Image 1 (cartoon, rainbow, N blue to C red):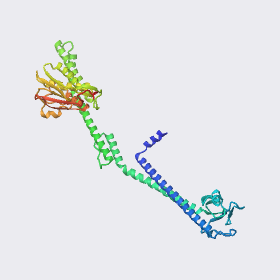
Image 2 (cartoon, rainbow, N blue to C red; image 1 turned 30 degrees about the vertical axis):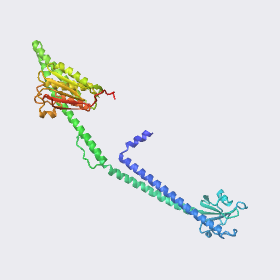
Image 3 (tube, helix red, strand yellow; image 1 turned 90 degrees about the vertical axis):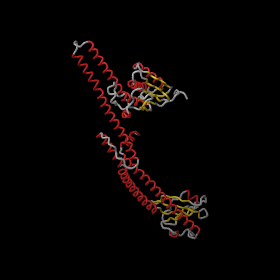
Image 4 (cartoon, helix red, strand yellow; image 1 turned 180 degrees about the vertical axis):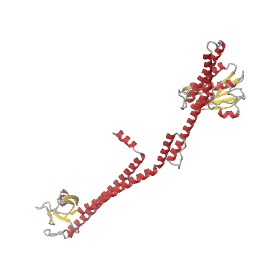
Length: 459
């Protein structure tokens, strides 16, 4: 049942909840004030009446108004109309005598206690003769008590009218509160409705135009945050389109070459010399290998989620040495100057090794025959520098862009994704990579990831 009401609550609109809460709050406040006012007036009225009755009864006892009890004493002698005057003597044959013609008001233990001297006075409300009476009793000497009873009919009528007035004003207050809540919800939630309309339009049209921001309140902050999300979404969409377009462009060349070679093999089956056939098959294998590498690079770049997919404690120096050993087998004519210091971090060993291998392959590709590739790891910063021609100034800002190749690199093998993967891996591990000029005048790359020189499990 609780879940049902909770679901019903959240299915209601925000405006209706504001109106309901405002109405309930004001209605509760009006009810509390009305009840407090009613009971305050009632208590004060009865207190005033009690004081008046006690004062008149005391004055009557001390004066001569009660001498000769056999005579009829009209109520006006005690200063009030509609007052019943009774004489209580618990020890007499007629314990209660009324000085009025009407039947006496019912007497109870409180009045008897006053007559016997056990109490100085008593005050209470009784029901008799079809209406309420306020009854007071004061001692009149000789185990006797004077009992005055005044009708509460005028007081009840006044309190009834007061209750009706308070009820009407309370209802009016609740209605006004509902109208006020509706006005507040309509005007206060107008920016929310406007923002909702804009967001729905963006979802419907997929136009990522920024939302106008007005003021500096919570709605403005929400609009600003939503604009940041739109910018991030627009950037991601642009990068996705660029990646698809660039990947299609890069895949077109090996696919065309592969299709051409396969067509030649099919058309010349049985007539092509063995040497040419072997060359075509080697070319097909090379194109397939290039496509495989390109697809692998694209898969690596498509992993845009933060953090490495498989985290473990790794030692960067050992990864560098493994990558150098791999590249050294492919570039036997080069000399690798390797100097490493321990550097421990939490990351993905496979991604780190691939990034470092890409840096080494790039250095090997641009190094002259018999050149030296410097590989230095110091305080978590890996420098990979070659002795080649270096990176031209206009190309420096774009060397890490996807599929970017300088004019001098377009004739060389590669997909243009290697350095982009290096930057992606560095950013996933909370690090950075930059390019510049190395110590020998060639290209230099500095790859840094956060970690420490001691194993992570040591203090």
